[in-house]
Length: 323
Image (cartoon, rainbow, N blue to C red; front, side):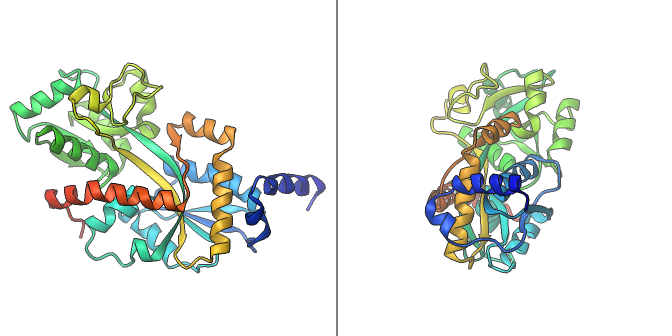
């Protein structure tokens, strides 16, 4: 190890709490499993944080993409990995909240096979239509759906995605019925939305931010409880539709195999928190449409429980299943 490398490692280790510095250290490169293909927001986030965590842990963190089955392929690989601190997995509300309700026969148990380490990011969601659509506000879209139930088509990146369930939650709370058109990913949703094949969609700012800001797609309302700084003229769903308390996000955190030792979990969580606290990392996350989301394992579990209380009854009422 060169002198400059030693100095960089020492500086990175100094950002960790003393207890984390004194305990477990990885013996080889770490594997970060991502349940999505390369290039998307989830993958970009993992690579950004893996770089910072690797500097603090003294070993490279290598991202491994295992897409498919609504993140279940990657989740199972993480759940079955050796619990020695050398494997981590990006797990968001699709993996930890929606899939246990959507799949009756999962080959693993998210609560018994994955250990939350810490939260990472929120993906802000936006209700949108094509720029040339006749409706130009969320109330107008809801009124059209009320006048012709089931005739307004909306696209989503897949059944059980945060985007799909956010729109179904909006429909339930507003007392309307929409027609869901599932796609495989956000890119085809946006293409068909701009072409007018579907009338509406819920987009996330990581994938659709540029199209929304440039006017190629018209944003009607943000699903957050407050207006978003990159879309300052766009109201919230709560404001536009009078649905007080409505908020919906896609969010992600970092997990490890459930039996990962406490010492390793503590060190990994500390490296994640330290990386998330760095100004350049936060700036890059916001640049790609993500909001840094800090919180330890307890906050992670609390968020899982809160979302399950909202979405499990919705999934059951809709009769959704993926097996």
